[in-house]
Length: 541
Image: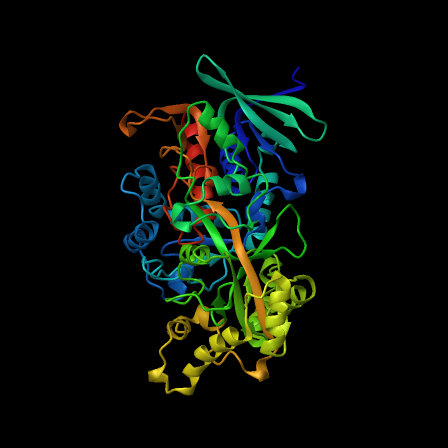
C-alpha cells in the first residue's frame, strides 16, 4: 500500500543544476512543483556543486574585455568539427545549433541570478586531429560550481513563489504510472524509512544525470574505439547517476541513444578522502609533465598533453596492455601547474577570496600538493631516479618500470634543451611555447625546461586511472525537451506529450548534442538551456 501521495503541476526527478533551473522557471510562472531528490539535503545541487564551474559562452563580455574575437558561426565550426557527429545523428545536431545560437541567453539568465565570472577566460580542448576551440571560451564561475549552485539555491529559496515548491530528499523514483496511454505518476521509495510514495502530476521532467555513476553501465556501453574497458575505472560522476530512470523510460517506449559516447577523463586518482564508493579525484595534469605508460615509456608518437583533446588521451591510454598511466614531473612543475578539475582544492576561487586565488597562481597550490604528498599513495616523490623507480614498482607490485627506461625517457626529453631553440624537435615543447602566448595559460605554465634538474627536486610520479565523468548520450528529445518514442523511422517518431528530459539525462539535448567530444564548459550551460526549454513548453500549454 502506498504510504504517501503527492500532487503538483510538474514533477522533476533529480535535484541537480538542470532540475533546479527548471524549478526556478516553473515557479516564475506560479506552477506547483515537486523535486524528487535521492541524495541528502546537504548535497542539494548534485555533481555541479562539486564541479570547477566552467561555462561555455560565445562573444561574452569577458571575451570582449580580453579582445578575444568570437562569433556563433566560428563556434559552430569548432563544435561540429570536434563532435564528429554520426551522419545519421539528427536531434543532437539540432540541439547543438540551437544552443550555440543561445549562449548569450544562458549568460544573461545566470547574471540575473547573481552568478559572477572570473575575467580571464580559459582555453581548453584546442583539438589535435579534430579542430577544437579556436579561441578561449571556458568561463570560470567566481565561486566554482559550489558558488554557482549556492547562487541558484539562494535565488530559489528567496523566490516569491517558493511556497509552491516541495523537495522530497532521500526519495528514490523508480517507476512510471500510466493510465490510458498517458503518464500520470511516478512511484518510488522514501529511503529514510523505506516507505512507498507516488507523485501525481500533469508533467514530468527527468533530470537524473547520466549513466556514468554506474561502473556496470559504463563497462556495458564502453566505446569500441577505446579497446576493452580498463580493470580500474574510478567514479568521478554522481553515485546516483545510475541510469535507472533511463531504463524506465526505455521500458515505456522512450528512445535511448548514444550511450557509448562518454566524456571520461584520463588523469584520475583515488580520492584521498572518498565520499562514496570508488570515488575518484580528477587531476588537471601539468603541460610540462611527461605522460608515460605503465612501463615508464612516453606515449606517442604524438605526446600526451592536457587541454587539447581529452578523448585522445583516454584512447591512447586504453590502447596500452595495462590501462593506467604515469605523470612524471618535479616539485617546481607541481606547484605551478598541477590542479584539480573541481571545486575541491581550489579554495581561493571557491571561497571568492581574490588574494588567496592570486597567491595560488603565483606560488602554487600548496594545500593540494601537501595533501597528495601526505594522503595519496599514488603520488610518489623521490630524490633520485633509482628511488623513484623502486617506489613506482612497489606501488604496482610489479617490475614494469626499469631505471634504464625511465632515465632514457627523461634524457630524451631533456636533451632538447642542450640544442639551440630553433633545433628543438619535440611536439610537447612546441605546444608549451604556443600555450604561453595566451595570457590565461602563461600564468599557469612554466617556460619549457629540463625535467631532471636537481634544483627542482624531488622528482614526482603520479599513477593515474581513467575516471568516469559524463554521459554524452541519453534520452532522446525534441527541441521542446519532450521525450521521443522509439521508432526505426525518425520521420515517424512520436513524442510523450507530458514527459521531458533535460541536462545530462538527455545527453545535454537530443540524446547527444556533443557528439564524440565536448568543447568543455558546455555541460553546465546546456543543463540550464535544456531545462529552460522544457519549462517554457510546460508553461505554454
